[in-house]
Image (tube, rainbow, N blue to C red):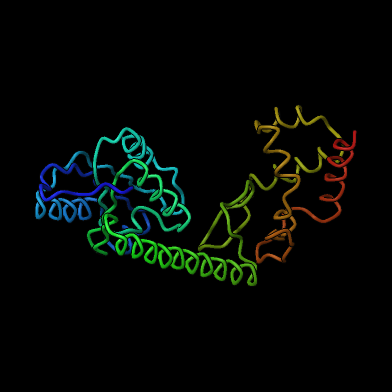
Length: 260
């Protein structure tokens, strides 16, 4: 059962949780301090006692792996407070499954959940239902953001844009991948040595590069002027460092080693 509140609200201990990601803070100004101030005012108006303030700065709502949230849930398990208060429900999570799971867990600990802006109070059946409805829309928003990101990535791939950090042998100039001459020559020599079946330890020592990084270089089609996305190869708009023949000969050595 959910804990029933009494008229003496001053006895209720509240855990305030605030979260913001770097992007959200930059775009929308949803600072942690602003969230906390609103929550404090909410508590003062109801004469609730603030037990502790939990803050996660620079963490996405898509995962529950957040240090302050983990501490909050540990304290909840020990029933150190009566209510969790957030400025807005998506500060807590945007994943409906996670929201419902946590709500059920809080019920078992007789801890209520309240939002300043949505006026959610899980002490009532209507409040709990509204909580779940808001959770649906939070998950919908997250899905729509993911779709927009995927569409943006698809568009970039269509125009041959590389989507990750510049690999060894390249640098970014004006948001475009261009050859870094000094390191590009090293990349070419790495491929040539590998294609001659020179021991990877010797190559690693010469260029001071870990063996795992060497394997990544040899298998990366970006050096052919191509981009790999979702298991498919696309023509990139960046220049190649090596040709197809050298790439194939080097990768043939890897296949031979894996077959041993």
